Length: 353
Image (cartoon, rainbow, N blue to C red; front, side, top):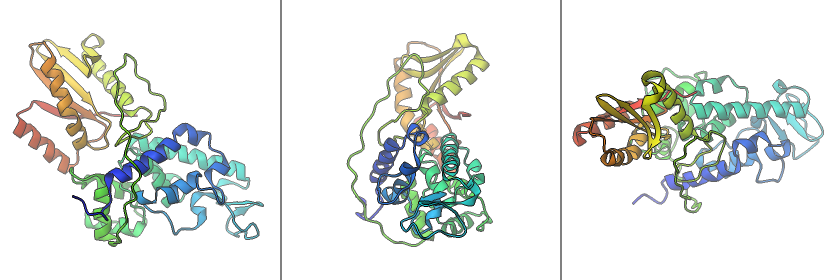
C-alpha cells in the first residue's frame, strides 16, 4: 500500500482529466482575454495552470507577467518594463495593443499544444512565452510524455546527474529527453517525478487531494477514423486529435505503400491493422500511450486474443505499434517478455506528423 503522502498517480490523472475536459483545443481557440486571465476568477486558463493543477507541478512564486499578459489588481501600478493600459500589463515582445498581444499569446499556446501532441518538444524552446508557463502547458497536453518538473535549477541538477553537461542555458527539451530516456518502465511519470524531485530538488511532502474516481471509457471500432478534436475520458485520457486514430492512419498509409492496398486491412475482426502476405500474416495493435513499455503491456492481451480467434493457418507475426522509441529500460522489458513468453512479436515506432 502506498504512503498517504506519496503522490497518487490516479489523483494526478483525475486532475489532468478535469483540466483537459475544461480546456479542449476548441476551448483554447475560442478563449477570450478575460477567460485567459483575470482578477478574482478561479476558472480562468491561468488559474487552472497555476492553482488548480498545482499538484501536477507548481509554477507559483513567479511574477504575473509569466503568462505574457495579466490583469492588474491595482490599476495604478503600471510596471515600466511592460506595456500597460488601464487594466492589463503585458510583455513588450507582443506589441503595444493588448488585444493583438493576447492573440499572439494564444497563437503560441496553440503551437505549444500542437507540438506537444506530436512530440516535437524541441520547437517549444523557441517560443516566447516564459519557460514556466509554456512547459506547464506543454506537459498538460503531452499525453504524459513530459516530466512535470519546471524549476530550472532542479532540472539542471537532474540532467547533470544523468550525464548531460547542463546549465541554465540548456534547452528544456534536451533535459526532458534525458529524463525520459532514464524513466523506469514500471513507474508512472508522477511517481518518477516525485522520486526525482525528492532526490534532487528537496523532499517536501505533498498531501494527496482526492479528486474523485477517474471515469472509464471504451473504444469502438469504426469503418472510418474520426481525426477531429475530441475529449476522451479515462485513467489516461487526454484531449486527442484522436491520437490513436491518427497513428493508425499513418501506419496504414505506410503499410499500403510497402505491401499494396489490397493486402492491408483496417479494423478487420477488431484488429487495428492486418497485413496478409503469401507466407505470413501480420497483426498490428496500435497504442497511443506515451511510453513503449505501456503500449506493450496494454496491447499483448488484445493482440493474442485476435490471433487465437483467427482461422488463417499461415504463421502470424504480432507487432505492437506506438509513437515513441523504447528507452533502455523499456527495451530490456520488451526483450524479457519476448524471451519468457516465447512470443514472436516486435515493437514498432510510428512516424507521426
